[in-house]
Length: 190
Image: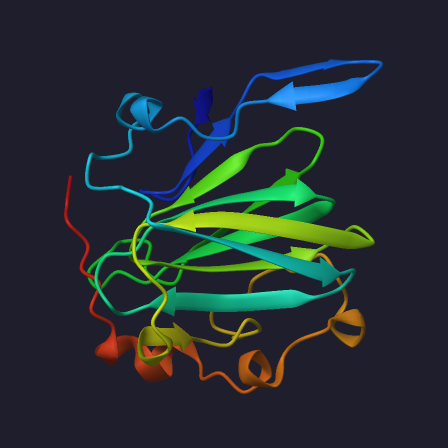
């Protein structure tokens, strides 16, 4: 597994070795003993895995949880997505900064999204299955979001606005600046 540096301080792009031939491919997607060697802390123990299926043009985000320090390990098991993270840590020099990554079923890269980052994605293939592990359990009362199209953040989604498919909840989420003072995440200087 190779770790590719990201522009933002915290997220990690993990690129596994893919073994393929005319029959298909084999890829190891998770090995807990490797996590500390890849730069993930021992506290990053995954306790829940989720799987979503979405059609072309679906945008999900920008989501985060306020019940503790929950990190995610995201991969696209089928199709292709543009995966986006936004730094929402108070005091971070990159607060409100975003970065995007293509995750697909050809290269099998995974994105580690640490606590203090909002997460979202846009489906660029006909259909996409997104699987992610997380270090805390989902609690509806702790689930939060800000607007995926917040003009102050200005995420460059790969699908034109008229072709995006967005849930009512995501369409009605507030701007990041409207909730910034309520966020529990703090930037810890290296």
